[in-house]
Image (cartoon, rainbow, N blue to C red; front, side, top):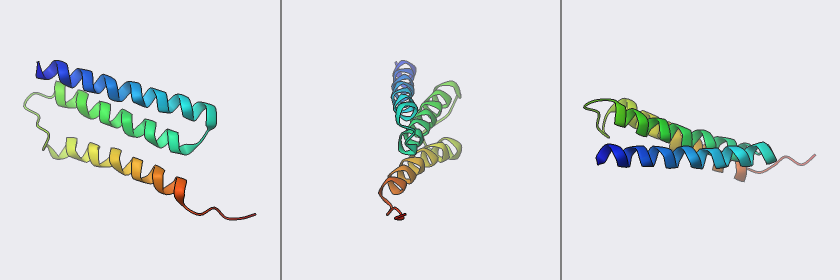
Amino acid sequence: MELMLTGAIATGWLVAGLFFFRFWRHTRDRFFLWFALSFWLESANRVALGLWSGASEHNPFLYGLRVVAYGLILLAVWQKNRPRKSP
């Protein structure tokens, strides 16, 4: 049951990333690209967690992937809210 839920969560992250990627293709706003990459990293994290025998949430590699994914979200928000230079 745990593997099935892990797969469902990974699929959800993947689909969310696809939505953000589609928004990026229409707007070319890097905000959506960073979010898509973040969600895809989260999906890869869940896939690795499900396929790696004996893996746990506290594995440094898997935890590092999660830190990078959330770092991309912070980067997206920071870039979107920083002041723009006037021409």
